[in-house]
Length: 108
Ligand SMILES: [Zn+2]
Ligand SMILES: [Zn+2]
Image (cartoon, helix red, strand yellow):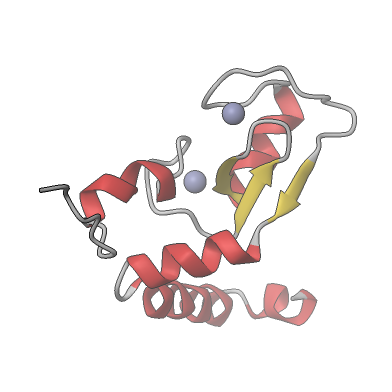
């Protein structure tokens, strides 16, 4: 008998793909390096690329002056779908963040 692939992927098998290599948490505001297709949190990869010119995961050299990164809404939707409660948690975190910093809420 051949094994029928299950459509339900165990969370531990996908954790590797949906975890940010920089902060080790689940990826928030997924941003993907186009050259190697690795994704990170926006707030993690942007400061990283200010000082370094390689992918934190595979160490592929990328163009520092004009890093080829793109926001990845599709990927982020997958992360939120795979991690129950993550989206609500992030919304709450943002609300708390802006409540304590009303001056930044105005800029957002
Ligand atoms: Zn991160
Ligand atoms: Zn990479």
